[in-house]
Amino acid sequence: MDSLEKIEATERVEHFTIDKQGELRSPEVRSFDYVVAVVHQPHGVIELEEYRNGSLDPHEFPADIATEGLPAMALIFHPQISSDFDFTCEGLGQASGRPAWQVHFQQNPKRPNRIRAYVIARNYYPVPLKGRAWIDATSYQIVRLESELVNPMPQIRLARERVSIDYAPVQFRSKNVQMWLPSHAEFRVAWNKNTFYRTHAFSNFKLFSVGTDQKIGAPKESYSFTNLSDQDVWGRLTVLPVPGHSLAPISVTFVIPARASVNKAVGPGQDVNISAELIVAAQLAYSGAPGAILGNATLTSGSILEVVSESENTAAP
Image (cartoon, helix red, strand yellow):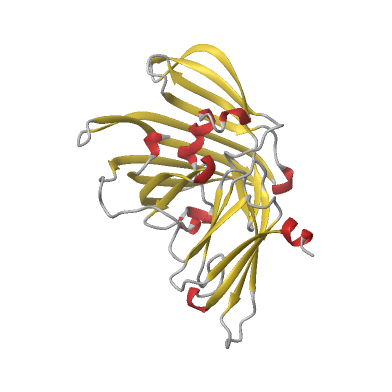
């Protein structure tokens, strides 16, 4: 996890549509100035933030299909998350020409799924995964990680997903430090009777300069919500416009995954489709226990945000 804190890189994405004959069509290519940062939220919540060309907008990706969070896949071994999986050591093999331990993993059905999900039409669908990691027998660094679905997910028409990520050592001479970072990832999906193949290549790694004014946080003009519980929580954000405008309140319903955070951008065409300066107040009503959700408003207009558990409303006289 420390290796992902405050890293800059160049990311090249190549997106291929696969036709009915299984042939790759000409790719759509994107190149991004990529910034990733691990943010340690209160109560042990870990949040991975990825910026591409300074934006969190998923529409930056080809075909309007975002593949995010791939560098975080190795966090299945983190002590706060590893209990969500069952592990089996399969013995000593090889990766990149070096001896490596092969470790199989699979989502424990009795534990929350906090690694991967699909967000479709603002609905959140956790995806149980299984796969294999190759861990260098000398350094114990993850050299390669592969994952696939435990089962197809007909409710979202997801028939297949296969991900492979290669890691490599990167030497930062300015700080005299070496880190193992994702170098290449491949992503193949069969969804809604369509199949696509996508590659991510990372290069030109840089460390953030210590002591600079650059800061990673919630995107400007947004609401952010952190789930401190071990259960997914449904929330309904209602935004009230300032008096004197012929605008109706706006409501957005979404899921806040267990031990994770969700940002909702504010502005025309964004998650909350209203200009920030026209907001006077907002309220998040959520389905979890009192105190399970922390909320924060990053708005230049300084409007009020209230976070309320529905159980509190039910119990009120």
